[in-house]
Amino acid sequence: MNHISNKLNEEKNKYLIPVLLLPVWFLLYLNLESITNLFVYDIINLSKDTHLTDAIWFFIFEVPKVLLLLTLIVFGVGIIRSYFSPERTRKMLGGKKLFAGNVSASLLGIVTPFCSCSAIPLFLGFVESGVPLGVTFSFLIAAPMINEIAVVLLFGLFGWKTALLYMSTGLLIAMISGYIIGRLKLERYVEPWVYEVKVGHLEMAEEKIPFSNRITAGIDAVKEIVSKVWVYIVIGIAVGAGIHGYVPENFMAGLMGKSAWWSVPIAVMLGVPMYSNAAGIIPIVQALLEKGASLGTVLAFMMSVIGLSLPETIILKKVLKIQLILIFVGVVAVGIIIVGYLFNLIY
View 1 (cartoon, one colour):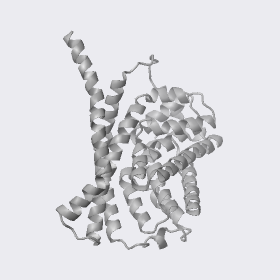
View 2 (cartoon, rainbow, N blue to C red):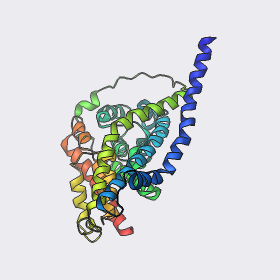
View 3 (cartoon, rainbow, N blue to C red):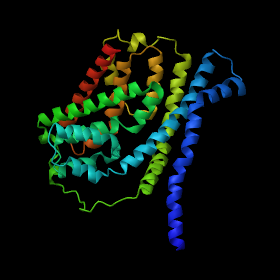
View 4 (tube, rainbow, N blue to C red):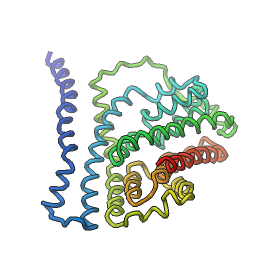
């Protein structure tokens, strides 16, 4: 009886943690600007309207804001991801045809756990499950580009409209790029050994997971992801704070503004070989926008850095021939450039 009672208490505690912490989260988030003003202007007594004060205020306000948003969204996405194991994702995409497969793969890429190191096992698993090459690439493009970190940072720094815009255009790029790669029939550029490998996996009945365990998965996701990216967030916001405080208004207009027609392709060319995650690059993007850079140019730069990850490309070289890697990078880069010009035209 004691064992059962302890088990029930453990289950209750799992529910209690988010219930108790959620009001604290809202209290902090809604009063963050007032707390920052109190700290900057009253406690450390900095003078208003100086470059240093602007930079410090930006840093002290943005770091906790982004970390609070990230914690909440990662917790929610962690619960959702507990419903989507890699095996289940493979099953869902197996036998899917173009164009429906590209749409499904792109949407699943948002909620499926992914990192550069998992690119090859996922690629092999998809091929073995009969997932078409173009559909596989839609997943590989969407998973790193449209992740919860990017969405949280965009929402926190730019608002929901820009976050939604980024998500929708990112999905379009993943769908259309995968569709084009599929239509080109490029299977001959996959290393021959890939089609000979049988990825070992057992057919197991779907295990029913209690919701309390899914809450634990959300908490674990927060611990894992936030512990990995907080340093990048702090560094990115620190660079952004420096730009915010010291770079003159409209300084970037001549380099990355709408009038500089060449800025979008140059931004993508610079972004492709760079390696950073969303946590490091988005705060810098925000600061560039404040100083006159156009939205289309900076979003194109950000998409190329996040979506065409250099480590992922290097790792995929083990399963893809160089011709397919170049086509993959080229098709996605062209899609990003078109989106950049489109945003500059609309905004």
